[in-house]
Length: 317
Image (cartoon, rainbow, N blue to C red):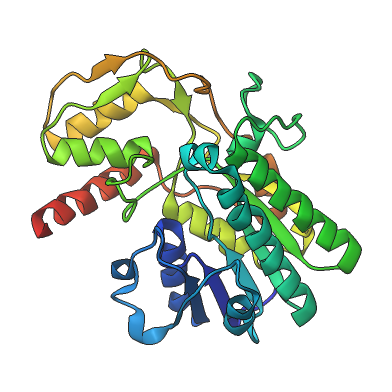
């Protein structure tokens, strides 16, 4: 196992990145955060600001990455344009971040030497392949610029491992949820939107019949997967699914949120969105074998912890 002394978290002021910062600090790692605050928030780091080095900078600017990555054992690359509609509207601009920004991170690590890069990828690379559960050997069929950009990052990571010996691991996140996920964005995940509607006593809108299912994975499990990937030698050069191996429908999700909140209003159903994937569930066998990863948070427990955070957020507003 590789002991982490100092780590860089790109996008560390964001939803997943800030939780990763907390976990690294908890085990005594020296942490640097690089974030341009386009979607991240300083408030996510308010409790740890005095214990980290924060650089307001951009992964597309090599000097910023070089300064942030100096002497780091591991780079956790979370920074990205994560809005699929935004990548559709601006494929060139989003590619400059998701492709060239990722390539910059990899190349800085290559030059620096002895630095592992753990990259955030996405289950979106599978497209709408109907096979369930999704396993890493499936044919990849990205259907948006975002998915293609994530796949390009994976391919570069694999190439840098094979060509230069750079240790890389790509984690294909399924549907991550938890505290700090921003519900104000029109591109927010369904759980954060449902939470926000429940605490405000507003009925949510569901696209289609609500029977579409997703593999929802709690953010703290995703963070633990990142820490395991930073140390697991066997995973170098690999892409690994990070999910739970279970799925819930959108209707089941609203039922649980309604029960927790005491808000029992039927959702408003509207027409399905073009290209919306019907079923999505992860095969996590590789994560179990290569990373020794198993999710620890039961779905309803994770939802309860998340709802508590949203309640407190609403009271502070």
